[in-house]
Image 1 (cartoon, protein in one colour):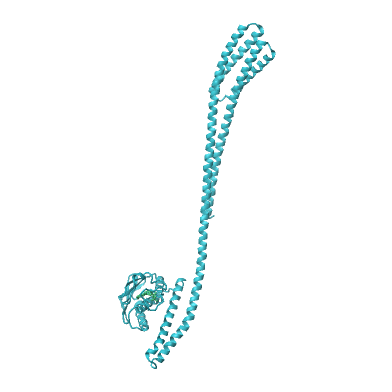
Image 2: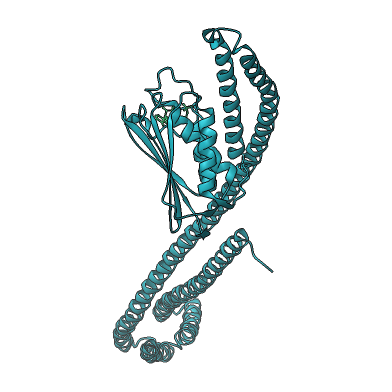
Length: 457
Ligand code: ADP
């Protein structure tokens, strides 16, 4: 059986709680047993003390019974005396039973027993003397004197026994008290630990549940965003397609019209026709750029690298650009001639370099020099587009790759702010990068670096 993380936590928490509960039960059992034992000992000590008190009381009653009997001859006093003597003997036996486990107390008890026997013998002697001769007062006084002495000794032994029992009683009570304190402390600690374990497991499970919820929400958002971006991409494809057809019609028609009217009307009258053409071109480029960006954001921009003769590609590109360049710049291609075929996506590369070259044309003065420089090195291929145009202010250099961002010094040069964003997206698919060096009023050089593995001479 495979345990999930939550399952492990629950089982762990449950096991720990069980262990703690077992521990508390064991400790509780031990403490309760100790408490019962202490209570039994306390009870026993109280019983011993009670028996001692009863013994002393019986001895006093026996003494007073004897005394009353020899003074009054009352038979009832004799009976009272005999019952008390019987009680004394029974209490001695009880004490022997109660103190059988305590050797020191046993010794004292033996002494008490012997003193009590001597005193009982004196009682007997006094009774016999009375029954023989009621006038022997002096002899009775002597017996009484000896009996009082014995009583003193018995009292002293009883006091010793009592003191020992009271000391024991204090010890048992102290032990019970510390047992109770220990039990309370253990129970308190284990209860706190149980709470900690319980809440710990609860918070872990809760945070995992929250995390899972977050992931689910994120997944839902991602799905929604993907749907939205698919929709956007479909929408832009459709719109661009629908716009580009009439735009091409406008462009081709205006070009035809231009050709027809070229010899019939004055050149200055054809100005508006050229404006229509350049606006149509701009709109067409805008649509292409928006479509490329939307596809790139939706992850649908196609990347199909193929072995490409880069030099031939660059020469063709330069020719294309020159054809469209109405302002007749001097566009030159320079190559270090060390690379011939590199694996690249032709369409994307065309988009990258054409955007940079058209920018170079757009932001350079009429007739200015523009260079496309190709350099191949092991592991990377470099393209540089260099112009002598308006340059890019330092504060704009970080932002120019953002869609719709335009430099502060563009004045009335038309543009959409999408070209470099498209360049960046196309480069990302090649895992390449772009850097710029520029001086305002002096010119700009964009350097594109594309890493490559296949490199044929
Ligand atoms: P657009 O050219 O349509 O404005 P881009 O995204 O191609 O949009 O360029 C963004 C900005 O970068 C431009 O507005 C301009 O300020 C600056 N820029 C790009 N290329 C050049 C260049 N060769 N010379 C001067 N500025 C440039």
